[in-house]
Image (tube, rainbow, N blue to C red; front, side, top):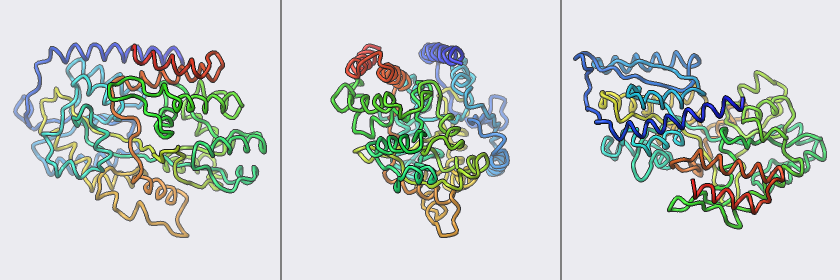
Length: 430
């Protein structure tokens, strides 16, 4: 698996290099709504692992759009999650990219830095831009230019197993990382179980990277240089190193991704799971007794009180030859009504101001299901939530550098001071 992961990364890096070269020599795009044959404009639309679960939603969405816009047809292609980066890099590099693509801001920003996406600041009116939540719109900007339409959001919450908490004598879930460390110690001493799982695999989730920001440590400064080589940054390295070396984290945090966190929680082996409200449906199916004992509470955070929200965007390649049609379709997919409907079906959150005002995301009662309560907790965080890892070039390289050196510190092959210094030097000299 390690070989495959590194081979995919090599392919992605090679394609980014090819893309940079192609964009330099590309002659640009033409803004049209009709195809080169003179018929209806065809918009090719790629999503990321949303089929077959949401086939009915997208088929109806596209049919409604085509009825309203008879001069435009939409071809929908769903791409498996693990294949999207390689496929879109290859398509953009070859000059045959789709016209509207579903990506997350971090990956999209890597290509935005190469000029791959259409900038939207002069394509959408201030009123159109203002329909999206301000912090989420900002997350689709790089160097002051907007490169994507905000789509659906996931504001993770803390799910906790009340049975394990009761066995450990814990009455309140942790709200901060400091409290989390105490809970981890108590759970291990009283039950023999681990309190939680968080991955340190460089290619996987960025939760640990986000913890730096939540604990008040900026990752880079205004010049793009490492900003974590500070006493506060060393304290974060020390925090995770101590948890691992004191056997308060499962050993496989170094080798397994976030999926392992879900598996351990479902198996009743961990007390806490940081995830989206939508995970409760899966837990209820796979482990009904664990789901029955589960409650939800806001995200664990640091001294800053900051909470993270994961976002999905729609981007339009600069090379599209149906620019106006692509903009019209992306705007349609992400409008208030369609975001609200998709959020209800997918149990996620919308990124528009008006859709988030819907009582669906806030009203709970004594008869509310655990999923409904968890959804309201998730939605209640959006006022304090933002995409904590800013859109920046080489963000995945930064994550790998920090995670690799954190692992070295956790395993004892480097001191915390040396790990921090090495990470900062590697980033600044990349």
